[in-house]
Length: 339
Image 1 (tube, rainbow, N blue to C red):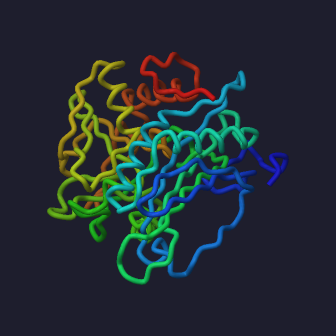
Image 2 (tube, rainbow, N blue to C red):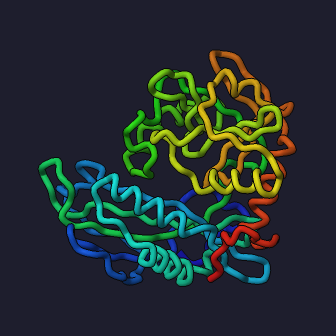
């Protein structure tokens, strides 16, 4: 699609075809090599591929921003590379080296830079994906793997920008068990959430809050984002037990809270009952950035936070984080990679 046909003023978080994508392949036991840029388009894959039959694959999500002066910025891409490598090991795939991962991302962003919306209107969402692409009838790792990167201009994940969202606690579905693959961005982790998330949206909620699978007592995640609560001036977020994704925005929020705002940050289990006593609650992720939570429905009762408005700590965290991401403020953490 030509950029002339894109309405940057009304972007949503949906896919728009861009110019090109990056592709490389690797045989089991070999090393990944640099790939090539090809026109964006459909790919050919065997019906017996391990990604189609057994879900052997993972993806990453990241964004590129364009400043008013035309600078192109990536936010902590090396952390996505590290998380992808960790996930490859867990899913019995060869790790994509950091240099190959970053080269692919930078190549795709540079070639599609005209698709990056003005920062106040959105970002270029970048999707690296690694999967088993060879045939394999038995339940075993693939003999060949494909690493691809494509991109799309996107608007906000939740409509309304920094507007409080309404959530509902799931008491019928779990996101991931302990010692499973909840801590990996595996492709199979996301389809089970489509039904509960879809049902929640039909009832007027933005997303689901999942509880732990063992006791159904502790908060895990908000759909595809990490959960935070502000209680007695402290920032509390669920600890990484193996069933929770180690979010890069999550890590960034904790650094900002400690080092910029001087707040105490606790990574620990937080029960849903304790979460209901919070002064502020919000979720954080690459797609959502930081989204304030205005209310949570749990056991047929709606709990209101910050009088349904954006809490002061949530707003301050959002302003600092986006100030760095958008290139408006000084990056004292060294998080920004400029292309």
